[in-house]
Image 1 (cartoon, one colour):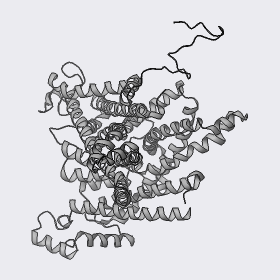
Image 2 (image 1 turned 90 degrees about the vertical axis):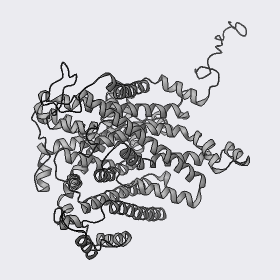
Image 3 (image 1 turned 135 degrees about the vertical axis):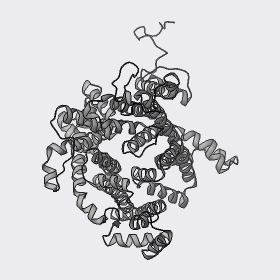
Image 4 (image 1 turned 90 degrees about the horizontal axis):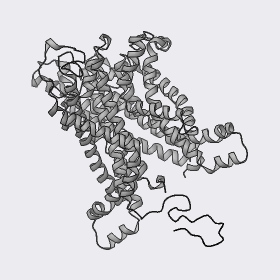
Length: 315
Length: 308
């Protein structure tokens, strides 16, 4: 198994190199140099050329890539000429806020989706199952922002229970304790994730319920509660491990929209402002971070599944 | 005819029913069987009906209903639904219903065109990779892995912001990042198909690679591809809605649903619900219809799930 894990990590590193090359090359082709931002819109060609030469922006892109990676490894994510701040500082300021929003939503989704999916599978084709399936199907087809808007309309504008804006507190503790501001963003992201998780959970639970070992457990007279707890839950949760790992790209996209909609200052909103400002280094850094998180998610999902499920222990 | 022979106590033999209780009928081809199965699924039929409705609504609708979406009319700003404006007007005095029709055209065009790009490219990539095997296969699949790890929405946003969004550019862009799942699916199919007898027979008969892929492998892998198309359309429609909502969608005089919705959001506090909810409902319905069709198609094409 150690051999498999080592090989799997090796593949991930290869993919990481490929992804970073692709993203760097693409963004480099789109925005070759920030010279105009630094020198101003009225800078002439000679000045731009001199600045590019001075700062290494006329080197071949592969050289620039290697230099960028070298900087990355030393913890330097680039420089935002639009905000006059290092990207590392910008990101370290807000990453914990996004991690809180996404993390708590992911945990809540898992905690709710697993029992919900099992309930639906056990009580298949009852009213409860139909209602849950219908709701999950509707939310699944809903863009994040529309879901968020409906919640804002009901709970913030009509009932005045909650704020239509995410927490504006500058400290993480302030954000965590600000339930009035954070409930709606968290609920939006959670509902969205539950919608996709519970569908998988329902279908894997149904697959497991059809297995022989469930019949054996029932036949030997085990109470239904123990059949579900000991035999169904453990087996049906295995695919969830993969699903959580693979949900990172959706979580990042959901995070981007939710933070923009609720004006919550996190990585997503940072990326959105960078898009409007055409802040090249921030875009590059956050896209790369997204890719790294996606790859790590896949890797952890694969390894966790191998550790958890003896049947697929390879090599 | 009643069978009365034998011991007399045996129940009459019903020759139209199989031992498990299913009906015995003439053997039908896989596609016809799948189609029948699909047509019996009420949700699938509902999905097709919704999708057909939106195609007519978006493309035939503007021919029948001439709402103003080109010249701002300050005398009819933010009118509620009523006479003259079935769905009210927005802050420019544009007719909301006409705008939704325009947006529907964009959503459906980008949805179908990008799915087409993704499916054609992905199917070819997967078929070539699966048939080639060995090093070529390994390299081609690592390329798929690499693209799968690229944050799709981020790249689409960055490129769309830089080069502007049009129906063609968005379709190509979304298609360029959606061919990965079809490629994997088709490769998987081809891997199981290529060792089957009919492929060996074609090979022995002297069929080249192109003929093998085009005539024997792809047609048989078509099932998974068809199922995937519907999900691709749904994803693409959601992606342009995101783009439009963030303000990087199509430019005037084109209109997309996400953009319409984000315009309406500014007036949510004023209670101008008609600028938000009809559009939102359109997005949800179309995406849901695609998902319904996809789920049903998967069930009806999956032989293992077919009711006997």
